[in-house]
Length: 406
Image (cartoon, rainbow, N blue to C red; front, side, top):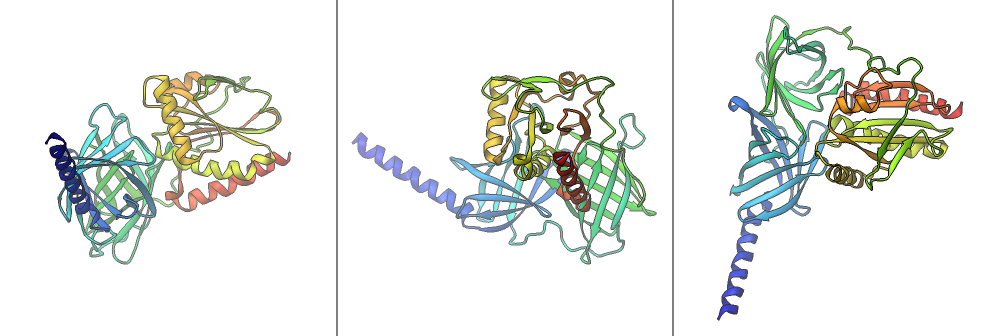
């Protein structure tokens, strides 16, 4: 009798599981989604669900972020971001509606943000708007304007004939990813959600000036202003960090197995070397790493070595090493990533005390075959910046090729 009850219970749970899965897998296609930030402000984004692969994809303009199904527990489904230590956890409220939360597991506070989505069948997250103004072009921007922690940026926007806008903000530490939105009348909305950052920019266009609020997740917000300015430039990313007079690049860090790696060494002697300071939690670092993968494959046989050091969110070595191993495997990184320690620019600056400072992840140091520092690049403007990224790639490729031939 007990065995019969057990079989019936297992059968019931199996049927329930099929029913629950069927509700969300039955709607292959586009979903309109929202994160609820502070003050009830909604950050919109688009999802695409592939029922055969059981994969959700977040669409940020030209960028696609993959989420894989991890588990089904009761009426809750858990999807994990491939690139970051984050989750989307939700339950099915109907065949065309899901609700739950986004969980950034690296955050100690404000780690969960309410999430909901409904089936739309449409790719775009913003509706067509009436065009009253065109903001295409370059905008001199100040975040935390008129405050102690004010910092500069450049807004680069492109507006199409339907009023939809794409672009990004460039800062001295990197870009703000693939932004998309619209200008409805004089009200601008731009957003990006990649599993690490949830960015929402709102503003009003008044007398050719933009003024509004920048929300980062549910934990932080500030004001921002912008004015058209095609000639404005940020500080040179090659001048922010530099080698102190008479100093040399030296460091010792463990690999993920705990074996100490010392630089310089015999394997790097006579090689062109890039030392990359990153965090696996950092989208700008991922953009740089994606480019460096191609660079390594193209020039490694000719004498290029790349050594990355990861500064990670966990506080102990084992978890830091695990995070880096997972990142390296999933992203198929062909060069070593050592374990730097906790995610701290101050720690990185201590490790590289021969430099004046470390102001950003990523920071990359390029050395020639003689072990001399050729340049140090702070931050990274990725493919979301269009021509800026393309020019950087072309110039860097030419420089590496020249150094290898010297």
